[in-house]
Image (cartoon, rainbow, N blue to C red; front, side, top):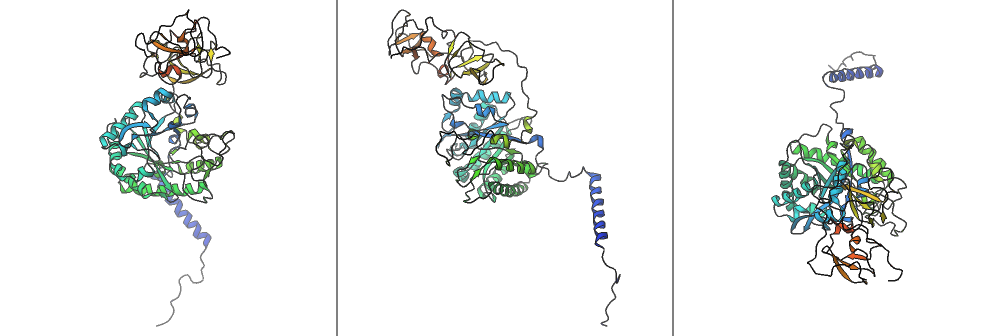
Length: 539
């Protein structure tokens, strides 16, 4: 009863070589079967197709100053630009502004933002508008209804003609759950009003921790999807983790992105939405803060940028950005606050490299086939409709003065007269006296000098000797003498502020003539006057 049963194949040992061959053979048959019904590896997510990956650095519009030329670095940066940040004018004022610093009209007149955006579009560099940010009042918070919020968002979208927007939701705005529904319904309303062949692309930019999105971030995304918002992707702010000893900022960011990918997969599944063909990474973007971060123990170097871009490329993230284009250069030698984060330089030695150049490597696919106007017609300028005086080779121009030539707007880099036309292609950047800003826009107003009431001041007389402080009028515009003169036409000061003995009385000349606004039509009256002279050696 207790006899042992004989073993089958007694004395035979397992051949691991034969077993391995059998397993490999079985796998080969399995792969062959799959290949018979589908292309090789088509069942594996591949991330975003290379020709659809894109880079766009953030550009802080609120740092621009009225008299300073703004945006040249924005235009020169590779890829596109994300302009930041549009916010409400006040806690209870739903009017959109640029960081409460400029109204939309201010940005147009003070530094030609509308014109620069149109230039980028024509040159194949798309622009995205970012709403929100870490400070100020978000539109969804200030607007009391989703209808009002939709109007505010829509006014910005329509003005700049953009098809893509970025909702940067962080800090107190992310914690304000009362605004979530207004924002979601407003964006869904705007998307629903667009034709199917011209959709509004919406990205959510959210903070991440080393373990991924915060609870508020996850819930906000779920709410947007539930409201019917078509979310193109989620851009993770891979910065400011608050780790005292991060050791390797790239490793922390990799971990954060891997965790975010898992969270987004769950969110899309819970919403009953299919992931894109490339998998969850096709829904993702990442934005590091270049150089010194707000957390002093965290610094993102150029080597970090290379490693970060390699990881993004390997996973197939759809989008890379950075904060910010304004900071993408080494701080100058006169900046004494080493170790302190600056809004205008990175705080690390970049040599001849830029972070944008590194991070955009492999992320310019979307721009490769951009339509660029390569053979534009020569435009005949019309002084009756031109937003600035039309360039004239015999006129004197001060630095900062704007002119129109062949349908484009230029600004003088230094005092000049005569010389090459502003659009002369034979001059390099250093030799040209003019900088190209952008095209004349259909919305531009004709160049006109505001008028004073008749007889406010005496009419200027060529034979009269005028002393400092004297005031006169020419064709309804007021001028004040800076020093003594005789026979010097005050109208010359509209374009030549350096050597004219006159200056337009503040408030009577539109800012365009002084390089700060749209201006008025003084082209005919602003030519060089006979007997022109500089200021005397003594005041």
